Image (cartoon, rainbow, N blue to C red; front, side, top):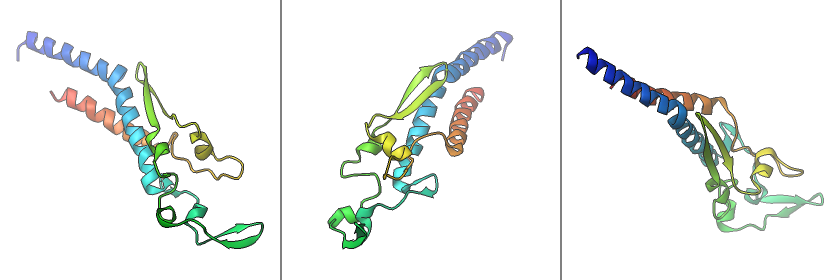
Length: 152
């Protein structure tokens, strides 16, 4: 490789790396995080910490201190927690790049924060938010993208 070829290659890689850090990293981070948050619904947990069981899957419930038979039938007895019949909450996870490598991951379901944080008698069943596993996965994916440019 001549000095001129090296300079051209170096400038190209420099441009590509700048794009990764300023634009692509946000997209990679958003996609990675949103995919991982969606998996919480499959696991019915927050990265290994199980969500509290729902009453509709229990054979008996308690009302006014008395044990009563569960009135739910069919798929309601086995459907995963927080999925509902339409899985709207799971499908509501979005991400938005903010520029200069920043990204925000959110749910656009109006009731998401009640489930994510808990509210009154509703237990907390977190499915979205900061977690070391997400950070580690994002770093791994961005590094993979950077390494693919450097190895060219």
